[in-house]
Length: 389
Image: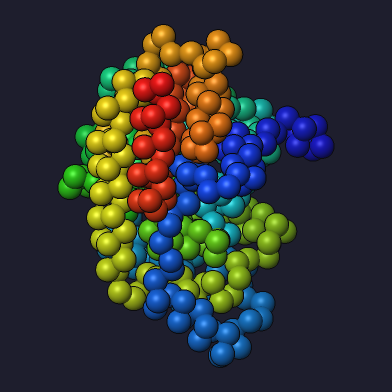
């Protein structure tokens, strides 16, 4: 197991973050951290839970009122046919959920198909579980979608799982119902294949687009393991609250063991905040989405005057995945995505090099538009001056 740990890489995003935290007044566009505060009714529920002394051990799979609220939300908002709370596992955020799934699902050497590019932590979580990462390219010219023929060809008898993420980090691509129906048809040909559907950005979606959960499609719930988090929808990043949906009783039993022996569950008071998030006012979701879209539009209007950077306007998530123009070179002669990130860092602008998200990401750089507008405006002004010079 120690060798497995040695094969795991530290996140490139963390390397950039550590560098930028040493700077005076940097522009924080490197990290996907919502700038909003947790809504008032969620804070009040957490405080009330403290006053009511809900501070003792709880069921490691999650408290019953929260799991029941998740069932109702999954049925009504996602059209996922969850039957009861036994099909819900509460976790310490979305990353913990993914680790719990892969650790419970994979045998040593099992293949997991992941999009290329994809969120940096996914490949390392698979490695920690003893799995083997196999990349399936997303194509910008297809709107950051899979080529169905490439996806079908990538599946082998060794493939145990397929990782899906829509809205997508880092590209902002959104899979529409027709795309998911194509994927469902391919997956249905392989009953041994589990789909891990990461829907962290389910509410961060623009231009009237619809978020569709793969597990809601006819016959797919039994084959899909759905992952959600409160981090993006309710700005609860530091409170660490996510959940998993699956009807697979054996997998649920295995996951219960992993949760038990990694954290013994989620903070009790955080779970009461989760109940308030799901059952209380939902105004914040629309408010956050409106502001995220305004920030997206502000950013893309700003880079329109920077020929060095160009990108497809995303339909979801809060990232700008932009291509570095051919011919650009840093002062040291390098032209790759790390060179661009380091060049921007010297101007106090945070970003993430595309290559850390996978080989398909080389030649791109990712900016987060979840930060406050002043950071976006300052970064855009700095970049216009930087590239004009």
